[in-house]
Image (cartoon, rainbow, N blue to C red; front, side, top):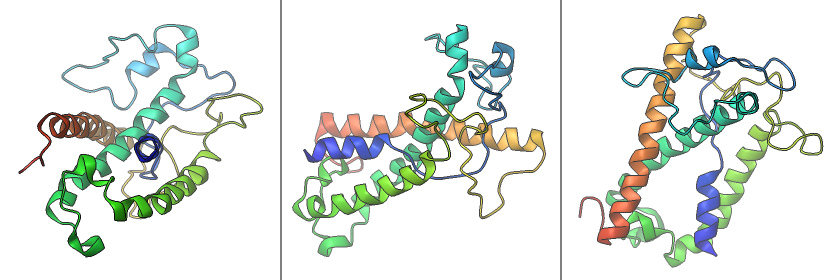
Length: 204
């Protein structure tokens, strides 16, 4: 049961920077050309436009481009929080008397954390609800559809003013965030896989 809760927690979102995409929604259904996608934020060297699985080849797939991008940005942000947290918790764990001194991949199974997780899931659920309402269409109208006036990844949250006002600067910052998110997703997956194989901490 707890493992299912963890999977749900990792699969849902977190709030972060403002306006990381340059392709805007333009109505229903979303009409985005392949040329626009190839020039969007996140497309960078050395691979350029990299879509070996063909996620945006057909018109129907292009109509879902904003949903794909929203999902990638959200998972990237969660991974950027998870990757350093995974390592930090193995070296610095003062909570619950400092008794939870196990590899991160099984730390959630420790008795104190089993009691703590419902509060964590509730907090994440609240954040997800607050971010999803302005992002997704009413499910009664259409499932898994981004609102026409929503820019993927834009939660209107930029308290430090990190997002440049000009289009070129915003695209550069967005590309850096997306690429770091992609690296973090690979990194956290690799760390979990390593601990599953070895059964020990990353830096044992």
